[in-house]
Length: 156
Image (cartoon, rainbow, N blue to C red; front, side):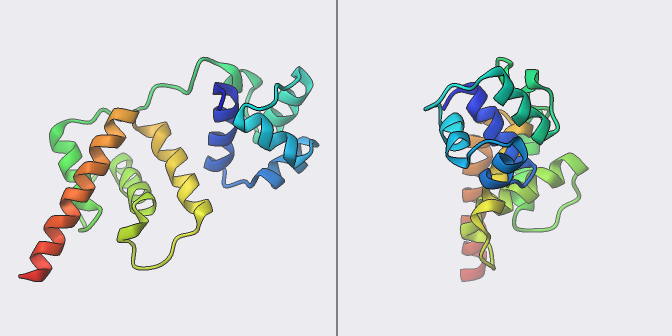
């Protein structure tokens, strides 16, 4: 996947749009959009503008070197608090609450009800926009650890 393809896919997911919806709004075939997102097809300036318009973003946002720097700085305490909050209500900042919401969706194996693939992809896109990859990796490990603690308590 190219950076532009990844940007298109990430923004599309964050807006809750399917490839078909975006393709129709951008007036391009869905198969072309799929190929653009996966890096199998280059796009023209006209197509780039149409996709950007359909996503309600600037064309530059799709071709810059990458997404903006994630806005969340994770300290050890913050990681622990966020991971624990996935399984229990904790007092968190709005930013932390949003990360917890995304983690609850992407870690759907811990969910009580089935979560759609679309919701999972959207949550991943939002999580990647908020937290750097290393931070996501640490958070996911801490969520697994917290899950084990919760299950151990239930077994006692």
